[in-house]
Amino acid sequence: MKALTQSSGRAEPIAHSSDGSLLQLARRYADAHINPEGVAPTLIDGIVILRETAASALQYAINKPLVAVVLQGEKRVTMGNRSFDFGAGQSLLISTDVPTVSQITKASLAAPYYSLVVELDAAIIAELVGEIGALPYVMDQPVRVDPTEAEVAEAALRLLKLLERPAALAVLGRQLVRELHFWLLSGQHGSAIRALGVTDSHTQRIARAISVIREQYAKPVRMETLANAAGMSLSGFHTHFRNITTLTPLQFQKQLRLLEARRCMLVEGTSITRAAHHVGYESVPQFTREYARMFGQPPARDIRQARMQTSASVLISTKS
Image 1 (spheres, rainbow, N blue to C red):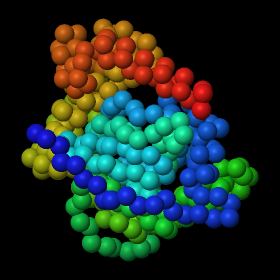
Image 2 (image 1 turned 90 degrees about the vertical axis):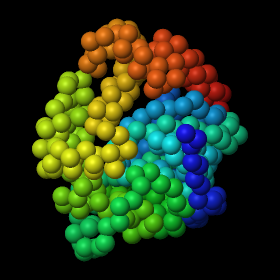
Image 3 (image 1 turned 135 degrees about the horizontal axis):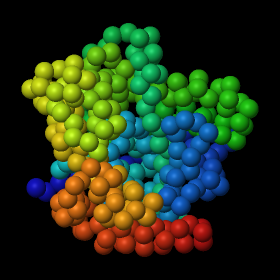
Image 4 (image 1 turned 30 degrees about the horizontal axis):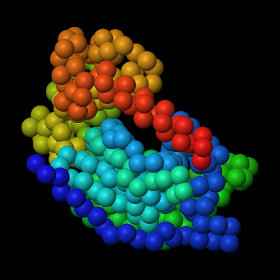
């Protein structure tokens, strides 16, 4: 099936101040702290800045709930048969654990891709939902793109300024992270984010089952165990799991296994056989078939190509 491509239209970068724009602050911090994977970790839990100096290969992941505020460049994220193209002035929301395929589509040495990624904190969202009061919840797509709102960009700008003032960050950081969540909750992303903080919502229940799968991904997991974790009947659990994640529980577990195996081979240099057994496969040929089905080529070829692309990316970064 041909992918449906969605775009909310380009928006200009926002949130300028006398101390510089959000893009300028993110660029300064990322350029000084970037690692070989294109990630600049910060002292704030759950917040990183991404930088790429060239269009990237396809990247596979099962993401936890997050918001990515794009400051420069363009990216495409695909979930199932839906693709989302977005760039500077827009934000990507992933509101639940879903498998995605992403690719930086516009980046260069002269104008790298930069985005600020914020993992959504369910505890903060629950506090805010309790204070704001009950609001109608509308079932939303787990992945969506919207223009970045001014309040979100301004809160992010103040937060990034604190990265250069660690003493102030220790005192004011959590308060600003909370404010950032408030504006996200109050904006266009709000209906999807709200479910993360609503006690016993379907999203929270399925999240409990996903936690079990993440902890036991290498072992056979009984559907009754997952349904009990979610507090649902078997039929209700299957329906809500697929509605929220777009996958069945077994498909979710399989993708998690294959992603972990790929990480082990790529990052730790684990052999194909050991990686297959590590993630719960008894048959290496079956692992190889399912790996090729997901990533488009057999493990050895995929890892070799990924390492070549990583080496090229590191070389470009050292010249930037």
